[in-house]
Length: 53
Image (tube, rainbow, N blue to C red):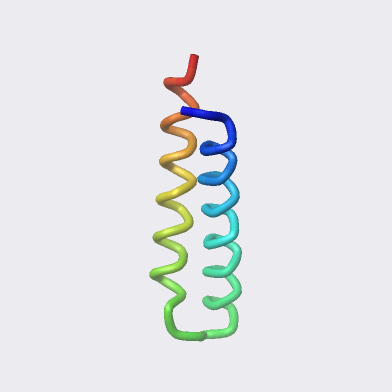
């Protein structure tokens, strides 16, 4: 894995997580989907980071 790929996964996860929180606070539709997507990407990032050399 390249460092730029891991950075993209991390920042995409953070963006989707923050947007999901905003949607949840404003009671807009799609909040659970954004939160699940964002937290999944962050979990994938940390999982890949653990096995990085």
